[in-house]
Image 1: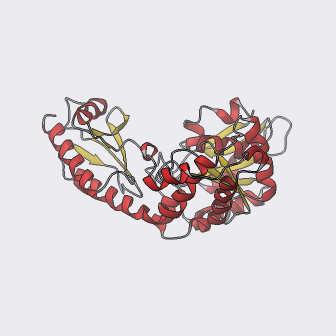
Image 2 (image 1 turned 135 degrees about the vertical axis):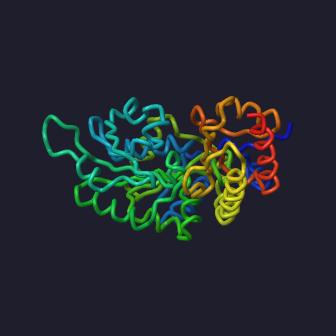
Image 3 (image 1 turned 45 degrees about the horizontal axis):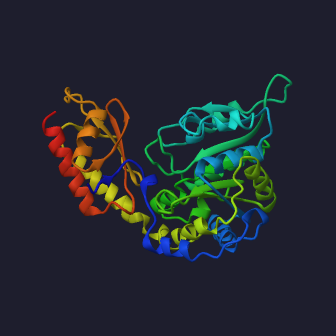
Length: 348
């Protein structure tokens, strides 16, 4: 069966142009810094982010781990949201592998952290306390509906961090979606950050990898941490080649995914038994849930019945769903998905 896959933009697969570039990539040993394709990708990524240097890593999780361990030592503390991907979904890596203490503060519904909460979380210099070293933000914010954080908010958080002697890292897995939604360059959204990591393997369709960007000295340290984490890849240009094509061909088309997300949301909003989250979609994610009137089915059962009709969607709670739009889901696929939802919920 030819599935329409709305579970995530991580399900994207490389375009024919990416496959050709991978097959033809010039390669070398990247641990020695000799892979020309990796070097080109890193330079392109750094330029896009307005930073001095970049480092190709295997995943966004690895990028965030390397960033935190580069900014913090064992027993130091990172302040981040209680709904942050790094806190919830990265297997506790910063604590387990780096000995870094996570200090979560409440995420607001718009994905932000309140300045007063961050100020209160920053430790005084005291032998009893871990040292506060880093603030982490997420843009777009997954668990807060895919909402984009503005440049002004990030600037304010950057100033707060600097005033207190902390660094600022941005988990920018979908930073280009934020840039598309806000109609500003990605570099503007991360200007206040000391480091940023973005994914190539989500909406940009590359098969593998993320890029961590920051100053030359930061990336030098991050390269060492990447090696310690087992992320020193060799002829990685085969993978980086797809990332180059992703940056060249996928960034500017992201508004199409946002438009298809709106199309899906508008259609779902007209189906009895579905309640959309307020404001959804903000970017390429649509969050919604079953209405109270739906008694016979829960989200998992709805997802199973949709799969039988060729539509995959993620149940993220007993009655809650997330649908993510991407390159491989066009307007026609959205309409087919809506029809599948109508049929499944007609019996609920």
